[in-house]
Image 1 (cartoon, rainbow, N blue to C red):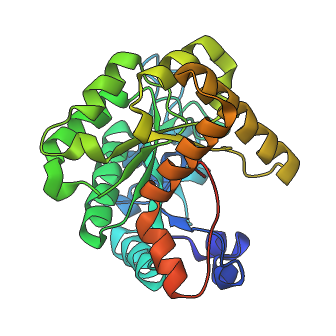
Image 2: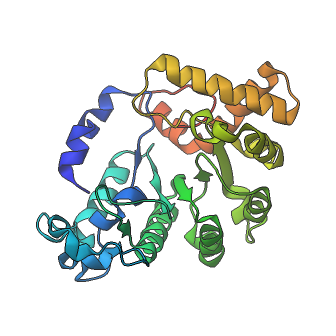
Length: 282
């Protein structure tokens, strides 16, 4: 992983924030900057998809094809593993699939096949280390469901959060019924800033998710605490409405689900003398 990015976000000072549960992973928006197949780091164009209408091509963006080249797997994957091993409370994420992602200033997209491969690599690493995983998914839930089915219980993490879930109600049922106990590991997280744009659909999704598998999140990284708390309260109100609960009962349910999903992280933080409180997600 890019050391400059880690420094910019203060990863080295994470110990100064003992109530924060860190997550480490490669977001799909940056998939094209993290190679996997041997030799692909020196061939950046292989990590990009051009639009089918021919209106753009990697050759039109020489800056994407010149140094600094994408990080090779033997560079970034050991770095990711080291970060996770150094922080036993850390989760793997946010990683996943995004059909809508576009490289800024272009019409190019991070290669879809590469996104699938990166997602599998993250899932396998999280499974190996026994860490919860936070997944990003846009217009790719069917592919993600099939990937989880193929990996099975051995290749899937112990807990999987589908964050700001935007798939269909039918897919919720499909995820929860994945064989081998994989379906029992999946949680669905919702945010007012993303999911609240279509409130009727949000309520339908919340109603369809098993009550012990619902998480709430802000999905905001630049807002102040007032905006974050306000977003969580809006999500809580939607959960209460969808599940026909009072606000207090909905808050207790969300808090219990938070504790269940982050059980391992919270235990590790208690061992290290830290702590975390919360009632939803990230």
